[in-house]
Image (cartoon, rainbow, N blue to C red; front, side, top):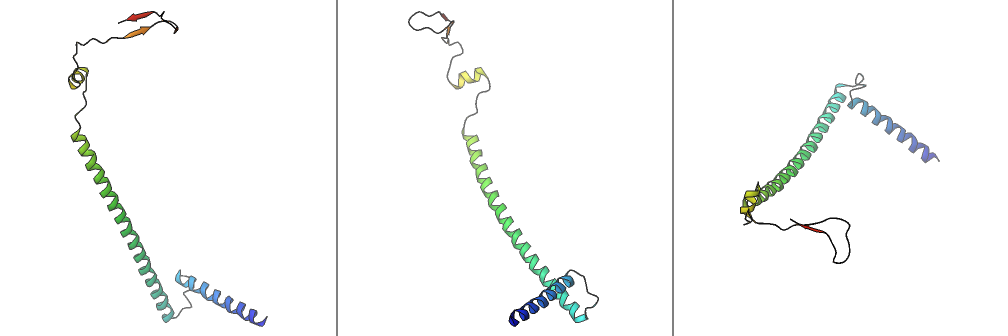
Length: 130
């Protein structure tokens, strides 16, 4: 039981010390600090900034590498699409061009069939031929 009381008191002091450190690092409760304590807080803040800048630089480098890879992939896709566009002949824009493109005569007759009325079974149907 005595051991637990000692442990609890020790943890309470540790928590109080950590809270004071947090206040000092955030710029609060600095009035009672000595010059040496202020220099120590300044050193801690500088080290924290160095670590933050390292992490940020690393993240930016990773993001740049991802974007370069994405650019490479898009460039390859663009090259493939460009080749496809230049290799395939242009599609005709009107009927005359379509006829010459497909070797079809403009004068060619096309047979069409039109059924009028209900569909019936058997040979009897009204047909109109065009």
